[in-house]
Amino acid sequence: MDYRKQPKKSLSLFGKLILTLSLILGLGFVSMMAAYLISDYAKEDPQAINKAGTLRMLTYKVTLSSLAQTNLHTRLEIADSIDELWRDDKFYRFHQNQNGIGQSFNSAHNEWRAFRTALLNETTPLNELEQRANNLVNLIDIFVVDLESRAMDKMQLLRIVVVVSLLITLLLTGLILYWLKTRFEEPLFALTQQARQLSQGDFTARTYFERNDEIGILGKTLNKMSDTISSMYGDLESRVDHQTQQLQHGHKTLQLLYDISRNINEKSLAYHDYTDIIERLKTLLNVRDIELCLLTEEGKRPYLQLQPEDMRDAACASNNCASCIQPENCISFENEQHIYRYPLSRDQKHYGVLTARCAPSEQLVDWQQQLLRSVAEQLSLALNLKSEEENVRRLALMKERTVIARELHDSLAQALSYLKIQVVRLSKASEQNKQEVIQEVTVELREGLNSAYRQLRELLTTFRLKVDGGGLRNALLTTVQQLEDRSEMAIRLHYDVQDIPLAPHEEVHLLQIIREASQNAIHHSQGTELNIRVEQENDSIHLTIEDNGIGIPEKAEKLNHYGLAIMQERSRHLDGVIHIQALQQGGTGVYFSFAPEYLLRTEKQEAS
Image (cartoon, rainbow, N blue to C red; front, side, top):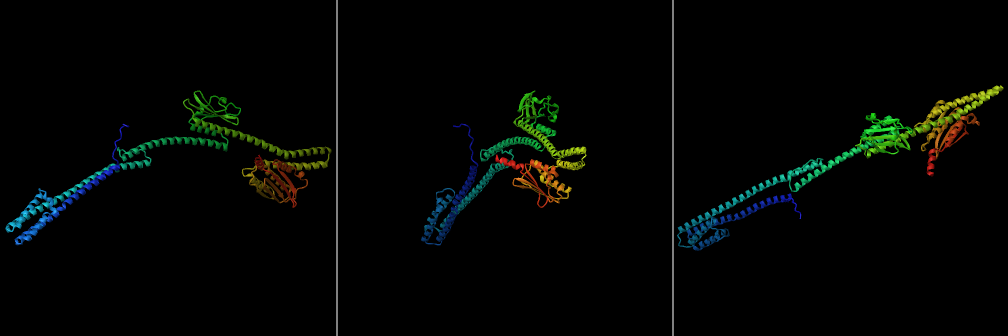
């Protein structure tokens, strides 16, 4: 059994409303019943008054009949009718009443009995009958007056009952309205205001009425709910602020990594880029001492040592970074500091180290260490890409020098060798004084020098030639425009290669073949038109160059040995086949086809 104090039970608001309505209905019912009973009880008095008036009239009538010597039988009939009236139900209630109106009724009734006796006695003098009749009428009048007074008293009582009931009803109604205002309207208004403030996000609203009814319980519940929501809202605000700070940190972290990645893709990192990274790391991590040291592969001293601006005077005293560079991330406690080292290494190459130092009471949390690790990886990638880019440039330079050497060997070196042979012939002919040989060699030297000079100009033009971002089509259009400016031939270009990507060296070799064949047509064909077509057919690229000149001679190799040799050499570099022939309608045709490297690589991948 629970002996704890139980809350006192009170009547519910609905019960109180029912009670008040019951009181009003009960009061109305009581007042109506009282009025009904009074009016019902008073309705017999007018009838009694009417009967008394009839008695008085009959009394006069029997008196007048006696005075007129009416026979006894007639007087007896009148007397019997009067007796019948005295025995009427309206007068019966007065027979037993000996006070007030009952006394006046009995007096008048007794006087009637005496008057009836005298009336039926024929010897009774007329003056006595008249005297008794007057006495009886007077007593009946007294009785009627008493009846009227009694009726007035009942009506007065009825009015009092009605007025009192009305006053009590008005008073009770006022009390009920006051009770409804204080117990319903004001609390409900306060609850409504509190609910409206709660809906607008104001959780400080409270209601201050202590009651055990439904509204009181609702008010307490709303107060508790406001406290709970306010507490939860405050907790949510703090959590939202915390999450917002974390998101801001995350955003700044991602922004830093994105900027580093973007700079890596767009360009090589420079001194100011490294400085900006160190400053932003200091702000993000809230760590004052951050240091970045960059080293060469064999070096032991940093060629670049960076710290935040306010820490540059406190740079690492040791210039030997061998102790800092570790194969893995290293966390240690040295010189009363927590030291976090993240090496910058990639593909087994070491580029430096990123170091953060904290006070003994401070340590880097996981996200800070992860950020340092990610930045170190990004910097390692940037330095690795820079190294690879430098290697690519070295290879490109070496390849370009190889191409120049090959071009010189295939053209100018061979021309100079030929001239050297002719000089030897000229020397021997001079010793033997052979004028015909001397004249022939002189002509050949002159032609060889002209050819060598022309080839030198072509080589210079070739070395300046480039295929830029516009692709092979734009380079061909530029070449055609240059050739038209230097000759009177009409040159037409038809280029239809759209679905096959060409490698850079393929574009350069193809452009050189077109240029060499076009120059041969301009210099030797004596034609007026030159058609150049570059087309794609299945998995091959086809080049056609045709002119309307005199055609190719039988000994074309001797006439233009170097140009044809250059075209043959470039066709072999593309693994293609070049064919030169005279056209039936006149002119010369150069036909070349090759399979692009992209298609060959795709076929190999599909086969594997």
